[in-house]
Amino acid sequence: MVVFDKPHALTDVPMHYCPGCTHGIVHRLVAEVIDELSIEGKTIGIAPVGCSVMAYNYFNCDMIEAAHGRAPAVATGVKRADPENHIVFTYQGDGDLASIGMAETVHAAARNENITIIFINNAIYGMTGGQMAPTSLPGQVTQTSPYGRDPKLCGYPIRVCEMLSELEGPEYLERVTVNNVKNVKNAKKAIKKAFQNQIDGKGFSLVEVISACPTNWGMTPQAALKWIDDKMIPYYPLGVYKDRSAKEAE
Image 1: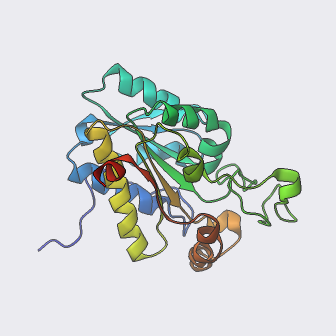
Image 2: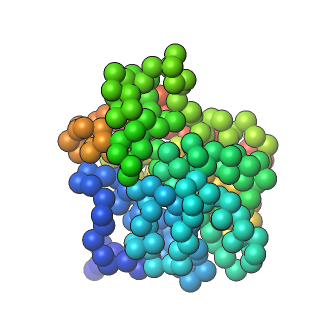
């Protein structure tokens, strides 16, 4: 009996991510969902700039490269061009989505575009060297905040799910993490729901995944997973921030 197998939607190539990075876990979850929903042949992924810039190497579905921050705009165009036959998702980091791409994110959500966004929040710019991101925590040491992020100078971190939940448009917003088995299972449920919402024509779904970046956090992989529990989750609480279908069912 087969108890473990590689998802077909995940390519059989080594990933470039650093040891302990949780991008690989999320990639597998996305691929498993694509397999289980039987949508590989009609799925198009959008990979912008950031650590996910080479995501096209890892998924067997069609992939499009987007300019930094512009993935929701590209996804909107692709989905509107052939809405009945394409399932479109973006895979974006926090620097990409919550900084240079914030306008695209907010307006795609406000319009309730029928796309799925997988948002990786590791509280730092990963690929470009560990600079402070819009999501970096107060007091967090980064390459551009060597004495810790000072809210008086840099403002407070942006909580994306909470902010988007104030809009009328979005169908579904949930924040999850992948630092232990239970949380990985919950993350997969959220990702699957986000894709199913698109299949059902319900509109904009975003799953925020609190993720580890041991290299730029200056930690071991084990310490980084613990840091998610100790520091990230208290500031970015897990849970569903908007689910229009669930609210209508009440």
